Amino acid sequence: MNENPCLPVLDLSPFRSDPTSPAAAGFLKELRDAAHGPGFAYIAGHGVDPRLQLKMIVATHDFFALPERQRREIENVKSAQFRGYTPVSSERTNGKPDRREQLDFGIERPSYDPEPGEPAYLRLLGPNQWPGSLPGFRAVVLRYMSVMQDLSLTMIRALAASLGAPADLFDATFAAEPAPHMKMIRYPAPGPDGNDQGVGAHKDYGFLALLLQDRTGGLQVATEDGFVDVPAIPNTFVFNVGEMFEIASGGYYRATVHRVVSPPELSSRVSVPYFFAPRLDARVPTIDLPPELAADVRPDFAPNPDNVIHAEYGENALRGWLRSHPDVARKHWSDLVSDHA
Image (cartoon, rainbow, N blue to C red; front, side):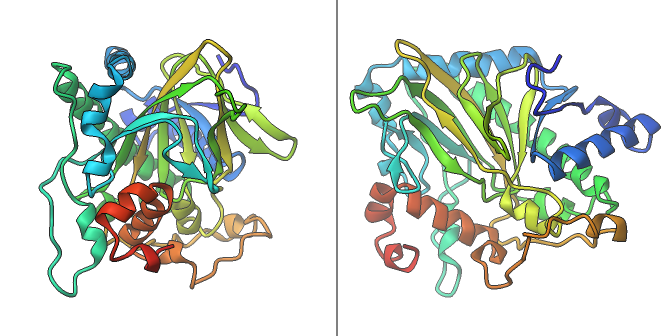
């Protein structure tokens, strides 16, 4: 089943059925090995209806097939929450424009104006922008996000249990008012300037990501031997650890550098990454590792208590948005741009 021997395919179904079963224990060991090693894996047996997955891929194609004028009607510069459409080369990674266009979503909530003394990141709470010319689009997206939230909670519990912690260790952090983020992305072929940076090399700063991708390819993960391709495997999600979970695991889990290269000429790629995140005011809880696991933490992991990743999640999220979307930052967050540059 695995088309790429560098990444394992893990069957989540035993843990979903009975987290205390011997089969679930086998899955937890495989998950621990994957999160400790490459930091990436394919997740099968997840229970997400393949028809819903297909609807999301079709909805992504439908949106990017709209005329540019209609796509720009919900451009993200109109949203203080960084929601909506981002044209090609508008987002940056490592200071270089990413060759992709995308549509960003979060939890659908009313806008919030913080009281004096409340953190500015609470302004990230708010509504999404929706294309008015695609009937049924909103219902499909919201249904998919709800299903992915449930799946992510299961993964969070499995990750905690795999390190010997109670499976519900993070429930108080994630189950109430989480702040997930989802993108619908189209990657065009390289432009006339030869830029093939679909997304530049980076680590995710959150807790975990689950990726739905088409068959085009382009995702690559860094290994000791260089970047390796992560092709699509039907009815699986690509899972990876973020920096906040790396810290929560005491460095046992690994947030791995990855990137996306542009697809071949005359083609494009679509994908739907779902980033699971806790309440905006959550701080990173740290698991007390069993001695045998603590002894195997890689030597180069040196937690720094002054690292901003230890701050409240909303502070990390806001820093990332301000850095990657300068146009939105200038329009809606001019009072904070200099403080988060």
